[in-house]
Length: 324
Image (cartoon, rainbow, N blue to C red; front, side):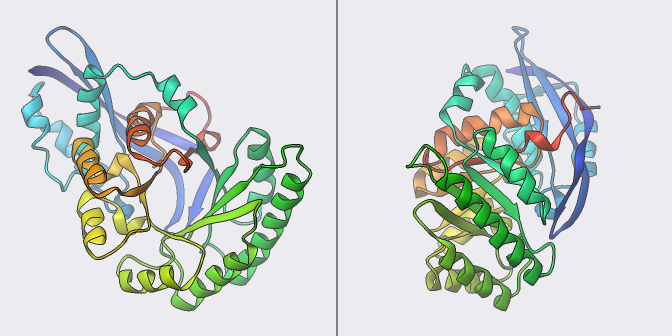
């Protein structure tokens, strides 16, 4: 099958800069691609690189698109190299859209979503807003400010959560909180956070996991931590692409894998890997547009545990219709 191909770059500003251990992120840039088959049926895909997380750079993705001919085959799409995982995702997603009839609205209804809180004190106010919008799973960035300051805010946040849910008329209601360190803690800090989380756990408030407490080159230490505390640990940066997921699984990781579909690589290879190994996957956003989100949610609905919220509650970080 032959497809007409074109593409256009985009840029989206965050309402406020996103602060993580990796730094400050002010805008999301990527590429929208468009494939049209001989029956004039179209498919759209998104290339949303995150180079500091392990994908190709935006410039590498642009260079790749710019050197392509105006007509492509599906066989070519499946030969895009692993060094361009965001490109693999974008092109294969466009092909899948042409051949897929799944309704994104049905996916939205099927899945539960985790709301992303800002780092620091700002989380306290944003939590109330997101809770009132219906979120019951939340993700909070840590390893951004000094640990003593963050633990104090964490204690205020968890107290606020308990006060709200204890006053709720829904007596079975539970709030789940995820802490994302982006590999920014040292050994002592990771132990301190896990110890604090173990003490906070209750029937109404669950610290679901700490994401990537240590850097990617400390896999063995993370494995030890996962065995020493009741609070779970999830790998994130350590499993940025398919090769890394396979490597961590082979080295014995059976905990949570946070998978970012837009940068992990080929969707068809991801399906095979997850289904063959029964990966405990939490699917998460890289702040892609609605096009990348739709493709990622199709994978999440198919491959993730329905009891776990997906990490796509990020709409409040952007203005509406802000793609330029």
